[in-house]
Structure formats: C-alpha cells, structure tokens
Length: 375
Figure (cartoon, rainbow, N blue to C red):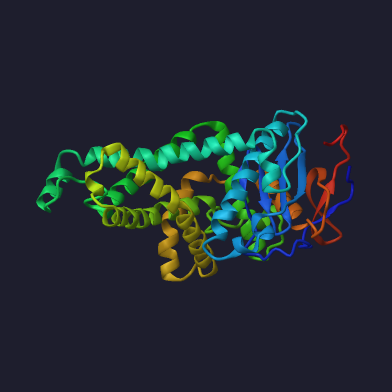
C-alpha cells in the first residue's frame, strides 16, 4: 500500500504534451503515457481508486510497428485490449468488489478475464454493423428506383460496387454515418452512458489543460473545451471518410484484376469484396491516425479545420459537459499516468480524497489512508 503523494507536475514518463490521451470508463477515466497508463475510478463512498500500470506497447517492443501508417493500427490494437480491460476494472470498482489485475502488455491483456473474447466479439459486431450492414443497405437501395435508372442511363446492368465503385461506396458511407449517429444517440439516452460521456468530456479537458501548460487544477481544466482533435471519435469519423475512397479503389481493382468478376455468383462476389475491405482496414486506420497527428499539430490551418470538422461535430454526441467531480477524476488519472517512471516494475495502487494545494506548489495528489486493504 502506498501512502506517499504522487507529484502532479513531474512528468517522469517524458510524455510529450501532444501525446497524452485516454478514454472514459464507468465513473472513471484511463490516461496513457509513454511509460504506461493510469486508471482513476470514483468509488461508491466518494474516494477515488487510482491504479498506475507500466505497459509495454507494441510500438515499444517492435521497431517495425513504429513506422508511419503502421503505428496507427498497432496503437489501435493496444487501445482495444487495454480499454476493454480498464472498462471491466472500472465496473468492478463501481460495484464495490475487489478489482482484478490490469494488464501490462497486449499478450497479458488477452489472457485476462475474457478480454480476448470481448475484443473479438466487439470486432465482429463492428464488421457486421459498419461493413456488412451499410453495404447491404446500399445494394438494396440500388436494386430499384432512381439509382437503378441512373445506372441504366450510364450503360450498366445495375448499381453495384463493381459497376459504380465510388458512387456505391459513397452511399454505403452515408449509411455507415447514419448507423453510427443513430447508435450513439440511442445509447446516449441511458443514464450510465450519459455519465460515461461526461467523463469523456472531462478526459478531453484534462488533456487540453496539460497541453496548454495549465495548472492542472479543476478550475483551470474547466476552462478548456470538451471537444478535442485527438480523440477516438475523431479517429472513427476520419476512418469512415477514408473508407469511401479506399473501398472504392479496392472495388475498382477487383473488377479490373479478376476476370469476369461482375458476373461471379452474388455470394462469391460479396465474400471476396468483404475480404478485400477487411484487408484494407489497417491502411485506413493507419491513414486516419497520421491525419489526426498532422491536424492536431496545426489545428488552426484551414485544411486541418476542414478535416477535423466531422469528428468534432460527432464529439458533440459522444461527450457531455462534465462537473467538477468528473474533471477531478480525469486529472487524477492524468497525473498518475505522467508519474510512471521508466523501468517501474510494479503496479501502484492509491486511494485518494482528491486534488489539493500544498505550500503553493501546484497540485499534488494526497493519499487517503483507506479503512480497507487495497488490491
């Protein structure tokens, strides 16, 4: 059990200000730094349980995965595993049960508490909802009516990805966006998800305060915007836009390179197209990752503002204005993540009352001596 304060402004992880980020949990926030990640969750009694976890990212272990347009997909895999486990962990803390151990590597995370199954199920649902369903809706829309007439006027037998790859994928992309907006709006009606969205906004405000060299106080962070250019919502929005172009190019290549492809049986054609689209996902995610990094470095540039606009607009649905309690938890997670020293070999657990000033030194985390044992 650790009863020593965590220095808030000592960035022992050497994390650049434009790299800190995380995600929202149930009554908590996870923040990643270069040396690991920290999770802070508000417990039923009002105190906050903070866990510091040294983490070996894929890009740290394999030099090839640090290459541009590759590191994005590797980072996404890391985030999916860590994020899933952190979400389970926050639910355990929220229920007042003894939380299990958090993973320290991707392989460790996949071995922990059904995380592999949850990640695979999430990936399967994403494929069905964001690949199969929009393509099916676009195909149905092209079977009759104005689209079929338009295709006939252009001398083709029908409106399909083989005959009109860009137009078809543009329509499928619109369906993907519609499905996403309806899904986010629907889950946002649940009180627990609205609370998660508030912690999402708090995470953005805490990171923005760090980037702006603020004092990392609740008052300072509360002045920041809840929308942020380096966000998972932004990543998803850019991926949807890029998918229109990449999938259209993929469909055109299939029609050009595979003899008689438009005349193949429907199931064989669709299975081949789905496999090609799945194989293009690393390229799409890699391009989206690099685009976000580029835009975040020059957010005032007109071209960056244009590229960021769809994601920032979508963030209005995935974030809510947080209160001081949510901002405080996000700051605690940020402070703890920055405090993870290189070479740290143990997970650190803390129970804290909150943020305080000490001798005019900006923010320190005061450790509350708990009445029960920490995990």
